[in-house]
Image 1 (cartoon, rainbow, N blue to C red):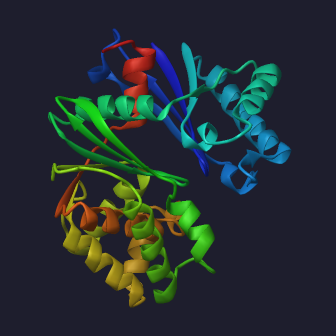
Image 2 (cartoon, rainbow, N blue to C red):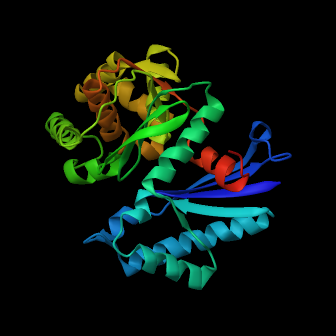
Length: 299
């Protein structure tokens, strides 16, 4: 069967189409992985998505819906996390989309997001316990899990795009702007209560995968495993305006050139605060977990 998953984020909306034989995730093949830059976060004022923002969302979803029909998908499953969950007018947004397009958007709770993301990771990696980090555009989710189940969740109300918008004047931040971003992340973490003792850190999402690709090219290393020292080295190269580093970041993922540095700073501060020396990168995450749990109905 063919399944279409739509991940509605604060900056981008991504359509992933899977072909799955017999409901078994191990047979899943990605037919399409397409990103739409909607920039919903730029339409949020006083914690509400404006009418222009709702219009942008509907226009993007209509385009995606058309593509899904052309591909003759058996299921169509749009979901959202903090991008819509944290709005004060979430219900209004959902109702407008439903009335105009007939689309039901599944807005995941923070607990469901942690659970489903964990399902995606453990389908890719044989691991019983650890800590996961997912750096999004508007928020960062840190989840501790034990016996393959989440047991502690930390939500930071900042993400790579929010930091960029708040602190960066141009595309690449200055040293002063990088210091300001780091202080911001530290403040946010300092007000949280947590007891995360596991040192097994797993990264999911595009920011961390892009960072891994850039570092693996620069140091001829493993893009699926890198250290805090690697992260600190990359940040120092960026501060020094190293030309080769800038070119490598662009090659790794041109669309993330403006948000990658803020995302790396978030990762650095989290690793320092949790006293974690290295991170493994999972190829699967929330989207694959959603397919497994919500669509295929696997426990």
